[in-house]
Image 1 (cartoon, rainbow, N blue to C red):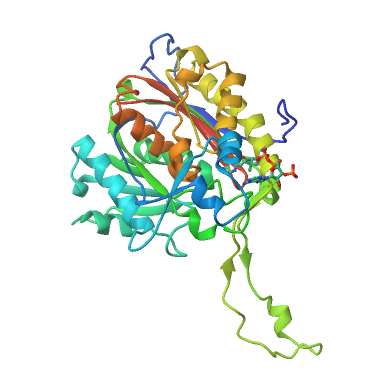
Image 2 (image 1 turned 60 degrees about the vertical axis):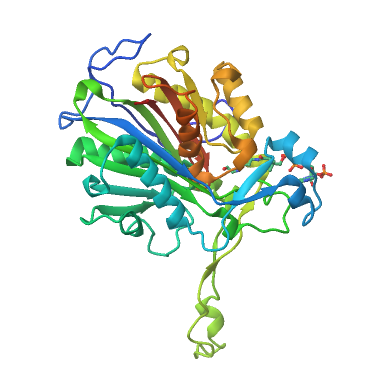
Length: 374
Ligand code: UT7
């Protein structure tokens, strides 16, 4: 399927998960829920954590040829936080999760699933299992990682809700946490000005179907666009370890490592502005809602100009668009729960508000979800 900007989309996965609940301004007509769905799920807590080291645009101007005016005009970013010293991705993720549990008044031992959405885990095999340990859980919940770059948190919400609806889980922590600074090329002014490190978390909780708060979603991926944004594995090929007769000369091979982030900014910009409005519209359709029934548009915080362009395309006024990119830059899978947490704690997002959230980024991956807070 090709969208309005000509971007070729792979088959999408989208669903209406709304049933008998309704949102102000919209009625839930007949249910299209799969028959096995006997539970709803709601968002009952959120939290976030950021590293202590604040790096300003002026700080970056000391290491690459750039300046505050260029960065803030082209991206909206003024500061970002970078992991340093004894800080760790797991530590940030656990702090965000602890705050979400405190808000929800749920004991860590009552968590039965932890989903860590991250492309920068501290272990090749994933970091999710370390979160319950860091939270001091006496019982060990199931924990696993989800790798989907800047769309990770949206995928995490859909996965978490599916576990609740279909598998009987009750309290699911969905965490977005990233340390992209570890894969940033600090000599490339086209990328190093963009990224920051952070973690954000929500607690999804099983509830009656009538109280369900995840109304609809829309998910996509397209491996062809991978070339525009990636950090690929680099390894001496085994072929290089053989001489012309095929005899082994350099075995064992070098350990693999990942390159720094490489990005074609213009292409990624064009992709985001092209696909995100359509995805939000699909998710709204699946929820049986229209743009006028959402209180907030909460997009992955990649570039203020992307937020503005998507909002304009969807005709959402700027006062209903959540943005904290000035303070944190692009924190990949952490950006949506971090912005959600700040908006909830500052009182902008109130219980009962409907939010259209969308992520997009490497893979390429993109997707949207319509949720009600609280
Ligand atoms: O999570 C999703 C991941 N990524 C994104 O969402 C990124 C999407 N893309 C973007 O945000 C933008 O494309 C960027 C902010 C990365 C770049 O902005 P742009 O308006 O597309 O700039 P550009 O790459 O076309 O560069 C324009 C000029 C170039 O100079 P010339 O060739 O016109 O002389 C660049 O060399 O700006 C130059 N430039 C800079 N100048 C000062 C590029 N980076 C910088 C810089 N400081 N940091």
